[in-house]
Amino acid sequence: MRTLFELEQAIDAVKVDDDPVVAAEELLSIGEEVLENWIVAKDGVPTDETREGFRLLALHRQGTKNDPSFNACRETCRELAYYFNLITLDPDATATTNRTAMMKMISNHLYLFISGKLQVAQLGDFCCSAKPIRMADQDNTQELEGV
Image (cartoon, rainbow, N blue to C red; front, side):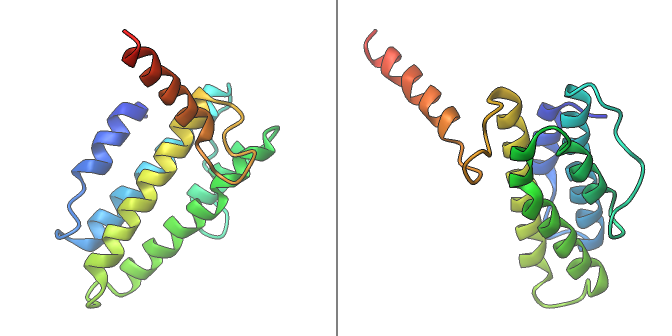
C-alpha cells in the first residue's frame, strides 16, 4: 500500500490523454488505496470484498463503521465507479478524455477528503466542507503575517 503522499503524486502522474482504460484502472486503484490508508489508520484490515461489483464501495462501507461523518465521501466513491464504467464500457467515445479528466479530479477529491479527515476528525460532519483545515491555514497565515 502506498502512502497518501505517494498516492497524491500518482494522481498527478495519470495522463488523461493516454489509454483511457489504463488511466481509469489506475485511478480506481488509487481510490482503493486511499480508502485502505483510512482503514489502516483506524486499526482495521482492508476488506477484499466487493459491493455492487467494486472493492472501492466495500472499502467505503468498511470505513464508515463507527464514523458516520465518513459518509460524506460516499458519493465521491460512487462517482469514481460511475466514471470507471463509462470509460471502460466505451473507451472510444468522443468524451473519453473529458471523462478521464473528471475521474482524475474525483480521485483527487477523495484523496483530499481522506487526508483532511485524518488531520481533522470532524471533517465531513457538515457536508464535506474543509472549514476546520481552512481555518487552521488561515490562523497559520495570520501568525506568519504578524512576524
